[in-house]
Image (cartoon, rainbow, N blue to C red; front, side, top):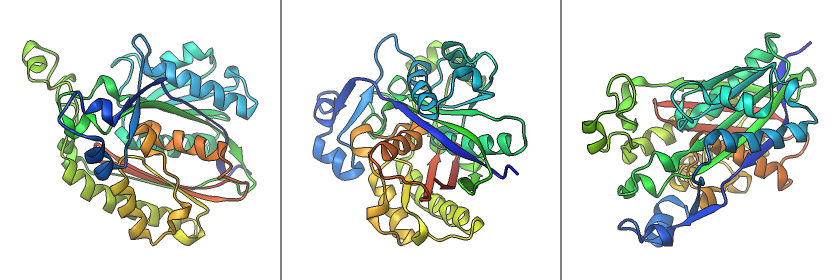
Length: 327
C-alpha cells in the first residue's frame, strides 16, 4: 500500500557568474565584513543575460531525472516553486514542460516565496498518495537578481540565483516524506514582496519611477517571525511522526541568513554538526534554497539510506513550511 512519496533523484543548477561581497561594495555602501558578519554570505550567483529561471530549472530537472533513472515522458506532474517566474503567464512550469519534453505532465507554479519548495513537497506527496500521480518533478528556481534593487543594500546583498529539483515516486517501505507542516499569515503580507506589477498596481511610469517593481523587505520583522515560525514548524513536523530534533541525522534549514539559522538551531537545541550550510556561497536563493542544499548534501555523502532529515523554510506571505523525510 502506498503511504507516502520518496525522493528518488535530486539535481541543481547555479549560474557561472559569481558576485562577491567585495564586488558588491563597489555598487552600494557596504563591505565584505559588514555583509558576512550580519548574514554569513560571502558570494552569490547571478543569472546570465538571455538566461531564464526555466533554463536553470531545466538543468536541475535533467540531473534529478538522470539520478532517478527516469525519462521526461515518465513525469505525471511538474510543480515549479518560484517568486521570479519567466513571466506572469504562462506558468514557468509549462515553459519547463516544453523545454524538458515532458509531454504527459500536468504543470503548475507555486507562489509561496521562499517557502514554495516546502509547499510543493506537501502537494507532491498528496498527489502521489491519492493516486493522482506516480512521478512528480518538483522544482524550486529563482532569478532573484532580476528583482532586487541594486541601490538598496538591505536587500541586494542577500539574494542570489539558482534552481534545485527533486523527483518523487510512491513508497510503501517507510522511506520518504513522513510529515509536512505548512503555515501562513497574510496579515503580515507587507513585510516582504513586490509592491507593483500585479493587478493592484499595474506597470506605469509612476510605479517604475518609484522603483516599486523591486523587492521590498522589513528585515527586522522577517528575522523575528522567521526564527519563531520555523522553530515551531520543525517541532510540529517532528511530533507528527513521533520524533525529536535529536533523532535527526541532518537538518536543512532555509539558507536565508546565518543569524536566522543560528536562532532556529539554538531554539531546537540541536548539535550544529547536523546542520547543512551553503549560504556563504549562494546567499538566499528563495525557493531554490532547500533543494540546492539537499542536492549538495546528497553529493557530499551526508545523506545515507535510513537517515532522518528535517527541512524548514520561511518567506513572504508570510509563509512557512517544514518536512521530515526518511531517506
